Every structure is written in structure tokens, then in C-alpha cells.
Amino acid sequence: MKDKNEVMPRITQPEDEAWSPDVEAAIATFGNRSRNEILRFLAATGPATRGDIVDAVSATEPSVAKHLLVLEETGVVHADVEPGRRHGRSPRYSVDNGRIKALLAAHLDYLLNR
Image (cartoon, rainbow, N blue to C red; front, side, top):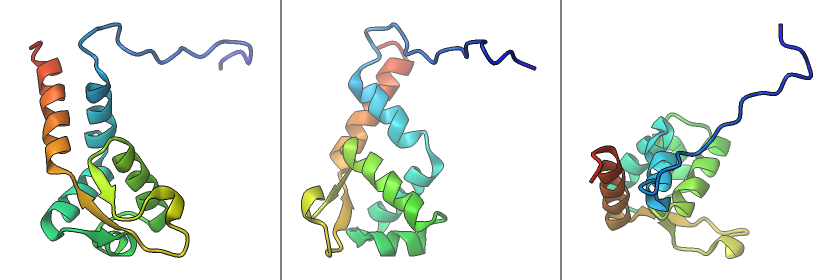
């Protein structure tokens, strides 16, 4: 049993110039099964509301809402209503294929030391 004064190890980021913001975004985006499922759904169907996404994927509404925030932050998903103007509106989310390709390329370059 750990002493309550014992310090937990810190999670650190790689001290590597190749670890770019795009590599970080790729890990955040593609390192989660639910986010990948949301991206696949949007890529297959085109723009959809959060309710449509919840009905189609194996995640709850609160979970989908959180995942969509991350996907918007990394730029792979866009909504047709700005975040501050969504009250009472149902934005439709769509995939940015170019951004997905850019993040995957950055991650691949990092992994292969290119």
C-alpha cells in the first residue's frame, strides 16, 4: 500500500522536436475507438447532427458530445454552427478529409523518423 505522501509519477511529453502539435492532435484524434467510429460514420454518411451520430455509434450522448469537442479542436470535424451560437440549434457535423490526411501523415512521419 502506498504512503499517502508518496508522489505519483508524472506523465511527461516526449522531449523530441519531431513531436509536433499535429502529432499530438493525431494521437488525441485517432487514439480513441469511439472517435474513430464517429469519423467513419460521418465519412460514410456526410453531415449529421449529434443525435444522428448517437443513434449510429456505440457511445452515449454525453460521450459523443465530449468526443465531438475533441474532434472539433483537432480540426478533423467541423460544425455548421459556431460553438457560441449553438443554444437551441442542432449543428450538423462533417469530416475534414484534408485535415485527417495531414494528421495521419504527421503521425506516420513521426513514427518512421522522417
